[in-house]
Length: 152
Image (cartoon, rainbow, N blue to C red; front, side, top):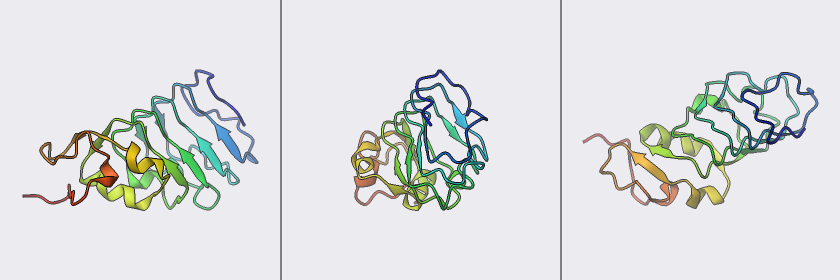
């Protein structure tokens, strides 16, 4: 189902429950609430790229652990990830083009995801905690010996 570039500010409620591909790219979505797609048990591909997404609530992708194969969250406003948003989803994911705040929480969230190869170079830290970690402006997943979970 193609819902691209419709100026949507929330996920439509009338999506057929047999939908396998859902394109919500180029809209004005700012958050994904819990259970947003729970009525779509066959959904295999979900494109949420080029929105204004800043928040993925815990349980946002609940119910998609078995069916979802590809998830595009690129070019949004995501700064961090709550691993509970994904609840077992192992879909290949594109997370490039977001203004990431690289910290311990983000560092522990990424290994739980199956990232697209482009994400290796495309996840760039805009800010980091601690700020002197050397993570800013570099591809986060390629930064060797970077441990943002160590407290000195």
